[in-house]
Image 1: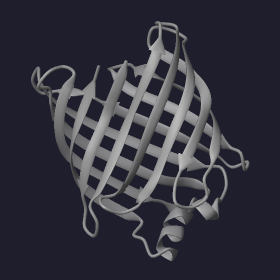
Image 2: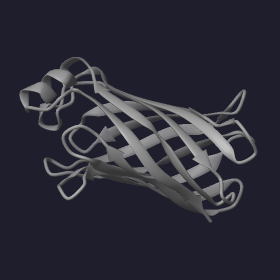
Image 3: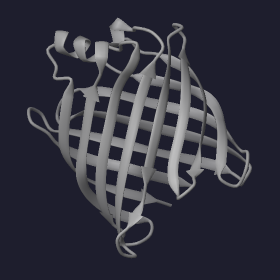
Image 4: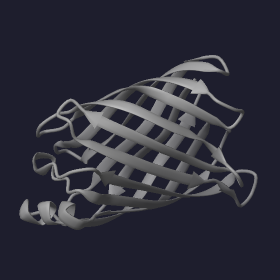
Length: 205
């Protein structure tokens, strides 16, 4: 199965951008091999960051999976490769949640927490709030990451399922660097906060 969860254009003050997030997997109900990718950049400009993960995923019950593997980041600055271990699945009341830990080849570590919820307004119209928080174990100045809560992203997307496998959407996306990560961004001449209006596509097959 291939799932393109987000492929979107982001209209933001200064320079418009783009972003994607998706995964493909092969296997059965218990054991799977998955490739995940996400990233973002400026339209007509540079790629800000991208990551690719190769994961082994094993179901531990009907609702949750354990996963482990590797992740590699691509960015203009220093690149990193990480060991990955995490858990994801459906929490009570149908919340999609995940918690993932990363340890890089340079010894820096961080944790990513994610959650989203599909609220059906009609059979075809769906409102999806989503959140992501990253927590770093130490300062990584060369990547602009401070220890503790380093950044947060919140989004609200309204999609219309023309078919179950094809759904355009509109929404808003807000991201904010926190603590020392915000100080690193300011020192680099960047704003620590950004709000984008988005239009995009969700598809799977």
